[in-house]
Length: 264
Image (cartoon, rainbow, N blue to C red; front, side, top):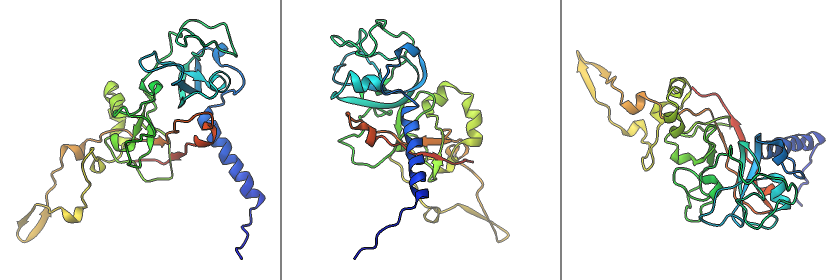
């Protein structure tokens, strides 16, 4: 007979606490009953894009958590995790024939909203859906804290550290748009010797012959470094796991893990 596993009250409380933290990370305290539109451009909230209401070629639009339940029940939704300074679009001019059931008095558009290709169901520099039915490579999606796009770990241009928890990541594109960030990258980024570009393989040092010079029978290895070794390719303080595209059962599927570790 199999031994029964004993679960203590402490284990239950710890599990509940972990679930609450994950829900907070995914939903950012969003209200599941009231439309967030009256709050204006919310500093951070969970957002969804409706593929059913905004057909291919249409304008990008985002809806709040409550509207995803009440107004878009049964629709094909893209879960966008959380985004900053956004006002719910549900029922405005971008949704022809659909009126918001939770809040009727809405402007035609929200001029301060910012959209990217995530609202059309594609992510990363490769602009592919997630999960991608044509990509069999197991890879995590990581969100840039500046542009808030999601990128494959292998498309970052640097090694993703193997660690328990990390906090933030700024993609190379945003680094180039804000050059002052490279000053911090020299101290905080993953070492340049760990850089892996797409299609390249990391070769162990034991298999790479080193050029050596003999001077009076004393062997001294070369001190030259490549440009790639001297310059880190991106600042990487932390990662967040990409929530998957879901329908109305998304609540159980979207459980991103937050990992945190200091980098040198």
